Image (cartoon, rainbow, N blue to C red; front, side, top):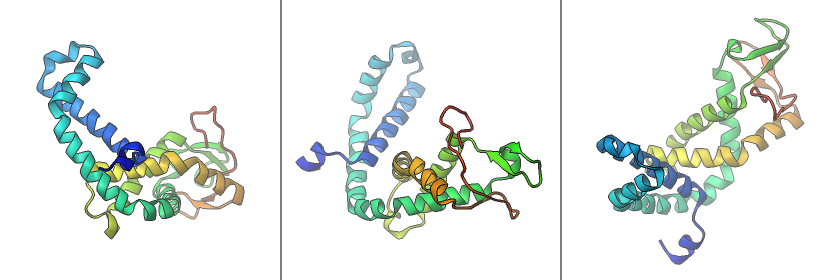
Length: 191
């Protein structure tokens, strides 16, 4: 890692580093259950001293891989995210949603849980990245970090763009097509 990468860390690598430290913390507490009663800062000091080299090596390796593919990823991530969201909605079932108007099997209005869609889209996007040849050397955590970065950055934008353009989404295996009509920020179902 050169001085430029230390001054401007890659945001996806930062997400990966956070996940690696969380994984290391869980592993440490599994190996040292007596330390679970300690405060969080002292536990993290012990974890960092125990796993500093391991996490550092994994982050350094991932940083090089991510930097090599970052430009292309940034260029295509919105399109990949849009495709992953459409696939998640298509793989779902109308019974999973809150029926706001009409009734099954052909409801007129459904409400979708935003956070659940976001989480499932992240998982599916990580899986779809694995299939791409330029990401074949990445481990699962690195792909999840890239997918989480894309979802954190562009998920709301993709939904808002779909709402503005009245882009239809197929929900379930039937012919049901829906458009995003409203994004309600104060509701658990949100969408």
